[in-house]
Amino acid sequence: MRHGLAAPRGCGLVLATLSGAHHAHVEGTMHRDIKPANQFSTHDWKLKVTDFGIAQVLTRREMMSTVEGPIVVTPA
Image (tube, rainbow, N blue to C red; front, side):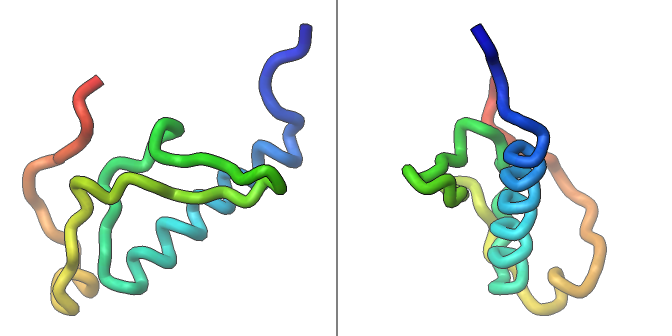
């Protein structure tokens, strides 16, 4: 029995995840909890990033600078 994804498909999913995170950030939202459980792929392998429950809406100033602060993630 074979497990996992072929390298090209796996790389494609990683790039799609990064693209979704980038798009959200450009629109002023930081997801803050990207993980496999917060993603799904459609029947035609289009990746969707879901669960923006702890996302942070960024101000323009926050988008342009590095901000120190607490790390907020879903507990394991």
